[in-house]
Length: 470
Image (cartoon, rainbow, N blue to C red; front, top):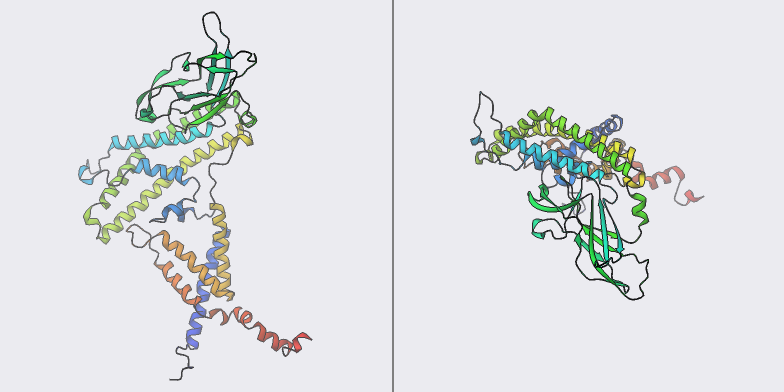
């Protein structure tokens, strides 16, 4: 066999077949792109929401509020797999017995966390303000440095002597040193802190301050100290409510903060925000009471399904795997319905907040998801890939991009997972595109023929290379 003879050759039937494949796949991409671009409200959210396997968090991270809502529901309502054993569930009148206690605890945890999210919405600006002054000596009483903290309604801070082993951070006061005075003792509250059983820290007994608290400490002035001295320093506090806690923060006193003053909430705004929160809280409670039976059955069925899946005999039984996958799909759709209704309440709450807050107070939106951008890129990308394949324009690049898109679809539903959605058709189409990308199919009845042969065509149209410049 001569060395310069091609080892493989394809005939006309193969060329025609490849061109037809290019046109068929191209039409599929084009029609899907047109559908996405023209269908009102189309979004890839449903596809992303159903993602499974190790890459699922990456797909779901772009869904607006997914971490706040779907993840929250999964952690509270669905609980841990196998938490309820089917062996412990006895039929009652032909119907599964619902574990009411576990279900009600889960619903309570879910609604509590939702309220915690909403509580954060209204805790804007600085929830604690601090001022300080010197109190002159009077009679036998020494001069004092006095620090007062005002705390927003519904919130509390912890005492100076709170045990760190209990969980929260104790309040701490730091007065900046000055050559004009010296603090000679410990700060003590004018009014003692209140005892409080804290649900955020395993119902431990704490000591807290609410609304307003003043601490005082003895101070000595140096000779010649100015009479208009103002103490300056910092107050370290951890601000919490009954349902939500925030990290420790430092509040300055004795100085000025224009930004804090600008963004601070007025008393009227605080009152309106509290009213809005109470209205949404009541709506949530009404919704939960209305759907409680449905929620309890959903919790029971989900945990029962997980327990079934955890049984040893389920691992190698295709029928059982299919049954579990079908049940999971049904319950997941039901969960999505719950989340949709809660998100509707949340969206309405945020719209109400926008009517009360100034733009500089509102800050960044809570959901800064790139989903809209992803939807736009996907819709136009699929459409353009389809056009390029149909026209045979930049065919190799279009085939590679189309194959990568289909690979992302396949990766969202790993075939080795029992409850994954079958992606055999996407895999087949992906390999067709990979095969097309390795051929010159775009030059066979496509515009790539003119791109590949443009110099030769110029010579034909314009004469020889030298004549072409005349």
